[in-house]
Image 1 (cartoon, one colour):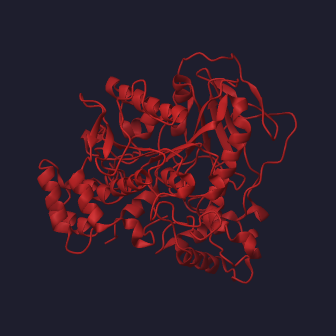
Image 2 (tube, helix red, strand yellow):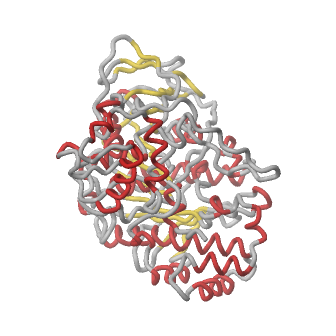
Image 3 (cartoon, one colour):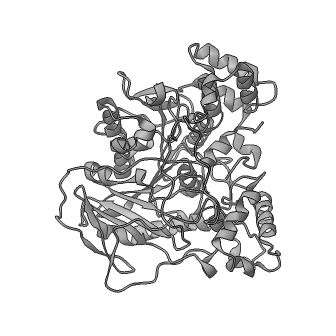
Length: 553
């Protein structure tokens, strides 16, 4: 059987949310023209918000730009119309591959349905801006790093639409596209000379360049370059937590939020080189002639990637490089970002989004449950782990026990480890949350799946029904509270204020945690929630110490 680990599902990293409109008034009646360092751009007005889509922040990464640090875009003359999302970076199957097989008749639709659309291109360094007005208000800026692990996704996915947050919270929202998979994280070590020692970090260096663009330009869009928050879910959370340990990124952001993506460790050079050697072999490129890497097509690289990641997991940053001299949060929180406050959290049953699409899970047999949980924990611990869940949750069915065990073993445990290390640093504060809101879809059998908090953070419930169900008044109230807390944090470096219940700073003794829920009790603070599960999983150690990810990229 396939080993199901936190690292498998975390790298799949998804994120969600669809565009929604609001009728809030805007400071200007028509689309603004804004001067950037590369030239003038003109967007459009949506729901009273100024929107700029597909704004270039970097030059093309094709050809000789591959595996090199990004460069600023070439200046242009006149006014560039920025009203449509730009292309996503190459990912997935090559364009020549046959279409995927249709879903079996009667199978439930996927909860996450925001895969990138449009023609993929290596000229992909674009970003999108939502602002109440391109004026001098100097609003806080929220820069979203998309999910999809380090392999897939796009900042232009419609679930990340910023109209409602920008309008209702008076903030500026930015989402970005950047290089992924082998295009962004191919480890070359010393193979290509000193210039390519950081080749396994260029996707993250794209994010740094986008933040530099924000620093240089966001004031013209009504934003404050001294109050920049970076945040992301799943793979975006992994990128966000990794940037805390990335020297080139320091000083370009001032707060961060990690949603279901606590990155403690990255890959070693040995694992990175293992993937590289497999990729080069599939492309018939000798290590002594890397120049061919700049001439093969993007489809050839995409076709070679599945074999390259077998046994080692997705392409991602490698430690010991200029951008990542050490692991992000191991053995402790990074000193270089000790002054940056954080919010860190995860969802109660993250794994249901990955496992629940299989209808047979709802009728899981006891032997299969025992087998699956045994694969998550050290030898001999499977039965006692299941017994613990049955004692704490006597009404839980077998599928929910599997979801909880899988989630607690990875997402939840690593959230508490990262938060504890940040709190123990005793510098900037950290706040911790758990998202408990159960989706009503299909009778509630998914409970609280991975990515289901995103439409609450972006306040896009009406267009996120595939994961959250039809909006209700209680759900909207929760979205109002969560989106306001994130905006408060961007504005003040503290999520408290307004509709946010009193949310204490985290410490590794009492472990106060905000539980976001729409039950009659509403959002509430609990001390050390799921304490027994946390302690048991901590005794097993984080799965991130396995040195390599297993499963599809």
